[in-house]
Image (cartoon, rainbow, N blue to C red; front, side):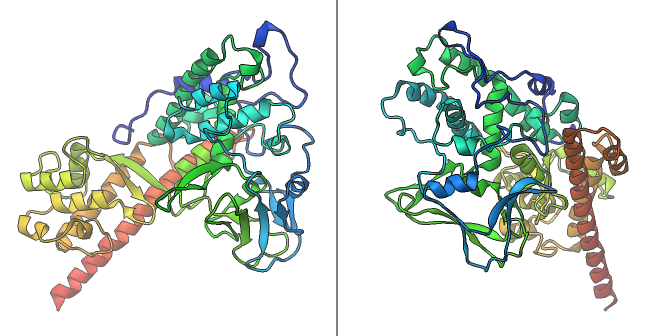
Length: 500
């Protein structure tokens, strides 16, 4: 999509998706070693309902209880038809009841002071510091890999219950990655795959010629696939909760994996919530019933008001009719001129705004030094405020009228026609035309996608890719419908006013 955020070609993504996995061979001292009996090969294929890491893992509920945690007697692990393994209740539970409580020593966290003077921890810490902050899941993922490699790890009963594969796009085949058909997500997938391939080299270099007591992974080889498994395990299951309290009273957000709690599924209308005390060192992590929970009802938390890009990228699923889904566009004068002319606006000047309009664009960070040109359509706002304000200002001819309104008013779709009905109709029709252009950049139509989903033998990752692009197209159509209704209402009100 030329005017959507651009993406590199996914060659490296394909290579990432087909690589073998080797988190089972020993390299220390060049001595051959068989796989640990507790380990299985990591799978590079995406799977909607993958097996757990070992065939018969320990009872996780029993382990949490024996470690001083609390699990409500009615909470049990069960296979859910739509979601794989999850938590359900066997009897009705009243609102406000404690469901799960974890003492502070049960969550899996990573702290730079955890390892003391341990030589292997110093190597691990050095690797963590090479991970960019935006990929925070890889930082905790390295700790997860360390514990997975360690025989007798405290967290093994939890880790053995983790899935052996994840349905995130970094493990899609090259063809299924292309089937996403959406440049912003392709860019993010490519970026993560490129990081993992480069980081593999960094890890191998750091682990080369280490003494056995210095090796953070017990002599096991770590490659891009095992790194990807660990990063996906964390991104799909970890919570960012309050950590150590600072002097100013605020807390540092600390990523942590919460055994058992992370088996709660997602809902925008959850029946459970996490309650965390102010003093993390003394309080337990609590999951409390947010509503009355009926018998056989799955436990669900709200993972966040996220778009489908993040749900697929981090969690490996797509939400149908996601109210927070949106599409990303690049603010481009030539594109907007074309959209305005297609919408019937005469002589738009997005490519050559007047100086006072240029000043407004700069205030919106759509022009000037280091502008943020990424804008979005969809979600609760329908039109991102910065884009709406720019359209209203550029399509206006009266400088004084525009300048008497503050930017917040121009950015709000709830403020009806601040610069007049004609200006508003022109702005909204330009957005509708943008939506038509965006839809045209998808190689397939929704009907073709729905037919593809019905094909026999279609893989899980192919289904996810097709479902994702269908939802993107439906999000665009929802924006068009919403704005078309607004245009009709504006014109109807204008007609009534003129008749009066």
